[in-house]
Length: 321
Figure 1 (cartoon, rainbow, N blue to C red):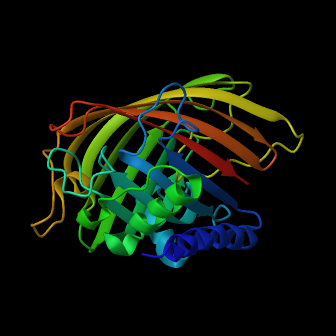
Figure 2 (cartoon, rainbow, N blue to C red):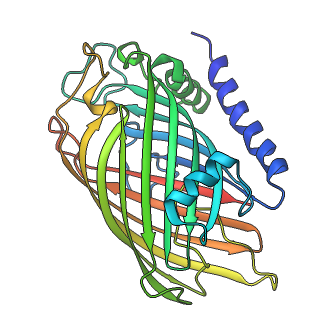
């Protein structure tokens, strides 16, 4: 196999970033990279297993600028008196078992899987409530180019090359509809706040329901609902004031389906026994100056399937402008 495919994928992500930046003008663009290597995770890490790598480029249109169908969705989400925003995203996710040097199938660990997707989302927002509906479609399997992307990166970095991608999930179109609501019960707070949230998703990729909360402290806090892939960075301070903040987030989920654990929808693929209840915690910090934002997030996820009694950690770096 040649390593040209991943070059194409990441070149497309780069052009997507530049292109939407030109289109956005008064809007916002965010690039987000997830990884479980030592460069992203503090302390000793266990690399290249579970959710091992992800990249996402998101464009947020200027407030109120959206197609007619998105306006109709926003009306149903929050009424005509709310602020609303529209966005598009493209991304790739990579999932692997622990023993990536093995060529033979691994029956007691999660299957190799890749997910290449595009999404459109609509956000309706008031000073105390934010609702976001995200519609996602893409490809699971070899057509996600996850195998070629991981092999290329490992080859370029001189680390062990995965040898079991021939056992990955088969090609399957993936669709998912995700609804999230976040609240600021006491309105905007300058230096500390608590933002509870509820989320649900349905589709052949993921089906789950979850709830949790985010605690933030800052000098001062940005005027938003906290970090999220579909939450646009707020307008920069005209005075050039710097926003610095730290946050901690926790979420519990009831998972009815995950194609990355349950395998292909129409039988015959490798699978493991998914645990129905999963917890996730995050800690991180962010900074914003004028129209530029930077954030780092450390994510800790509890055991997701029965075959391996372990947890997973990975880090995320996001840049918005």
